[in-house]
Amino acid sequence: MENCKVIAITNQKGGVGKTTTTVNLGVGLANTGNKVVLIDADPQGSLTVSLGVKNPDELDVSLSSLMQSVIEDEQPPGNAIIAHNEGVDLLPSNIELSGMETGLFNVMSREYVLKSCIEGLKKYYDYILIDCMPSLGMIDTGRGSFRRSEAGLWLPALPDPR
Ligand SMILES: Nc1ncnc2c1ncn2[C@@H]1O[C@H](COP(=O)(O)OP(=O)(O)O)[C@@H](O)[C@H]1O
Ligand SMILES: [Mg+2]
Image 1 (cartoon, rainbow, N blue to C red):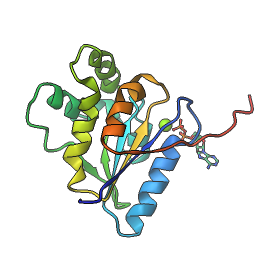
Image 2 (cartoon, helix red, strand yellow):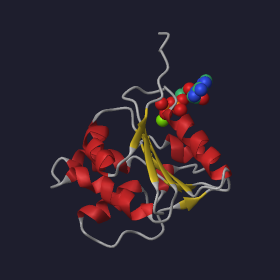
Image 3 (tube, rainbow, N blue to C red):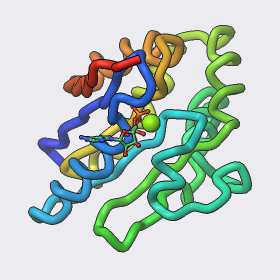
Image 4 (spheres, rainbow, N blue to C red):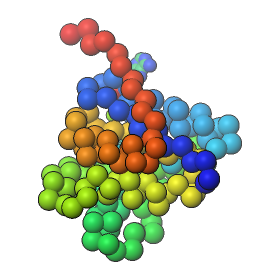
């Protein structure tokens, strides 16, 4: 869509509500008439599981396959997106993203790989929400992507009582 907004829900810390925020914000935006895709950018796949995929590691196609197609300059897989009956779409993730992240360090223009995936989705959606992993690795390479995609950053933060 012309005015597609990209929002990365990010925090270096785990357990602060990134995944919960992504789902609730996404479903809320969908319920008010927006086309929304949620991107699971955490290899733990919590967002993917919370949207009903029982075994993310058994998925043939995920965010890492899409990123791989960008790296290899190939046609993106056409079946990466899963429609959810809450009205949001999901680009799922699994443990393969972990290997992808490590491999990215050898890739030229690595900060453009995620951006390229995001750009490919912009024409279909009003909102693209990205549930980030709790580390700076991917976010670091992604930070360039997010900035280049004119993404907003949403930082959920809860004080850890421990
Ligand atoms: N606003 C909230 N109030 C209370 N508990 C929350 C809130 N948001 C998330 N939680 C709970 O906190 C835990 C961690 O949330 P999660 O979204 O998985 O965090 P993250 O993705 O940052 O690791 C979950 O058990 C979730 O149910
Ligand atoms: Mg999470």
